[in-house]
Length: 182
Picture 1 (cartoon, rainbow, N blue to C red):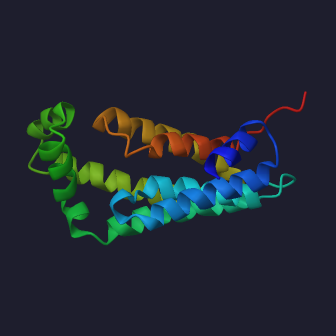
Picture 2 (tube, rainbow, N blue to C red):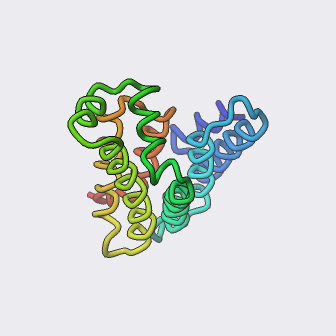
């Protein structure tokens, strides 16, 4: 089912049906196996279903709402975690688990956990700002660029792609491009 739908989507045959089918296959696969569950796969599946349900005569409102919901959920999750506010999460992740040389170097120059707290606050408030700003037409294009810069910076600092989240995000952001008709 996945291969046939992917072929159809690749060659522009029954695009909406193919997108919905691939999305549903990804969602079912993700939910069917807890050990292989990954947020980025689930988000990608949802994006494909929503893309298939989107009217090509209007902006992709369903994808806009999905991106807003993803970033809102991520920020609220972080806001409710004391380890994000204290910098403990960021310090453990970048300093201990990843042994990130840039993080370790800068954090040695500053008071204990100050750099970790700063990075945590930047992540939390950036995700919340993205969740809100993407909903407004006036700020949407700037927000899309901000998303790209934010995640590119995260990847550069951490050297970690969060599964295939970065690639999935780029594919989702393609839906927002205005492609010239000529």
